[in-house]
Image 1 (cartoon, one colour):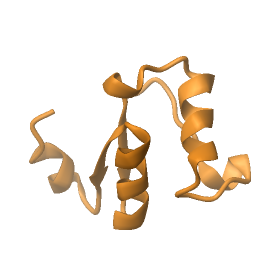
Image 2: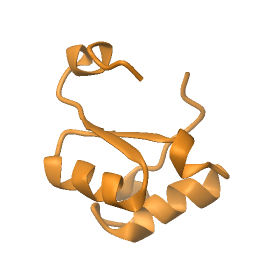
Image 3: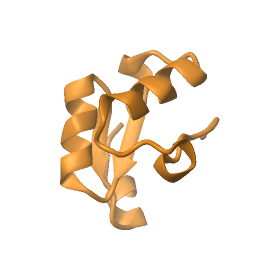
Length: 69
């Protein structure tokens, strides 16, 4: 279900910077409207949503299984 990911520590980018979302979209040639971002920080989730990616707070697997994507 997952084709790849971008990790802020490996990219030397900080979330919630726009640059990390740009890196994700460009590297994997993604459509923002078809991309989902999960994070445990509400601040980062808000930034993802503002960038145009559906973003959700993730603290446990229950958070994901409860979603209707």
